[in-house]
Length: 444
Ligand code: GLY
Ligand code: MN
Ligand code: MN
Image 1 (cartoon, rainbow, N blue to C red):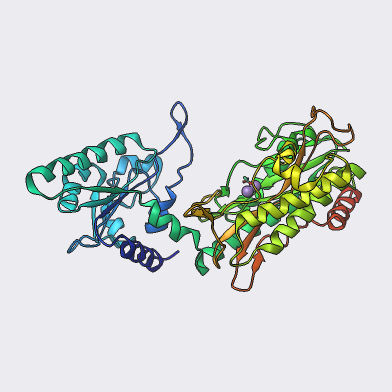
Image 2: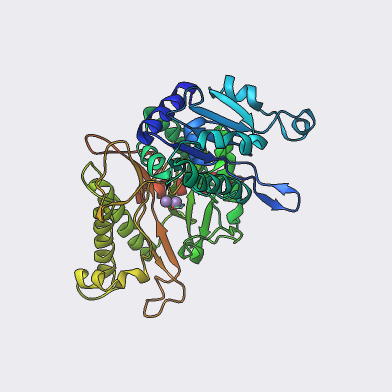
């Protein structure tokens, strides 16, 4: 994204604010262990509005201020620290590169922010994950509020800035869609490689390593969320990330993995056999999930809601389970009594963007929200038959299948961004046959 894009977003955000002051803090740096930190990931609202990538920073937007409508507080330049942890933009960079009207060092918040707060009766701020910053800002807000008794001016309303930024983030611009397509393209290469590399006796983490190689090799920042490589009954554990089992010939492998590119996420799941083909029970479950997923995707268009998609996908899954004999009774009544939840316990999709479970309301004034062009969502039904599930034929126990695509809502309907990643039974079996026929080690 270029500087103009961020400037336009801030202008749109400030337009929605009307007046008042918005305070958007950076994400804190997280410790992994002792003195080792995780690679830094900026807070998505700050990233969306400024592109500023550094920790220990804070953005202030004051639409009514004469000269400082956009202010950044940043880490000071520090030759010694920069030798250890990398270059900092400093206050000069904050102005020159990121277009701030004014920039201060982060230790100046206490001196400078009260000037911005004076006279603002509405402040957009929500405590974040950085406790020290929360305490500092809360103290300044309290001071502003108590001043009101004396001066008649000061804070009366505290509003969550997410009410503005999250609605904006829900609708993707052409530039954002470009980045999401790049994230999906990296996932496509990764899934294709993993689908070819599975072998009897190989470990799940070998596929995990391969996926993540492709995420990075495509120029992405890595995984959008911890990759799930779940073979055999591990596929029935929804958030399995141990990825340390040895896969066996008769297993299915469920891979839920997506690349992140310039902050934007992809989120894709495929489920394929280690053998050259699906077993009969595996195929029946797989085809049911595939049907539910395709019917769900077919519904995606402006005016339809996520709830409509979930309802239809659930119906198709239940019809399939009735057909197979894993449920008995009437589809409508079974769904009413949530009998399907033994096999299908999650929702059919979520928004996708800078966050993998992206921001934005799913319901408005208590009603399911209609889809609109520019939204991106996942469609990801699944069936999970736990190994020890009572009342289920042994043939079906330990089978877990999910199929997940990333779908853009368009004026005319939808576009499946991840359509190039194979999911038809014939296509997947052809890939597996070919992979197993090629001699030598698993291809990378
Ligand atoms: N990978 C998380 C999800 O599918 O929602
Ligand atoms: Mn998902
Ligand atoms: Mn997923």
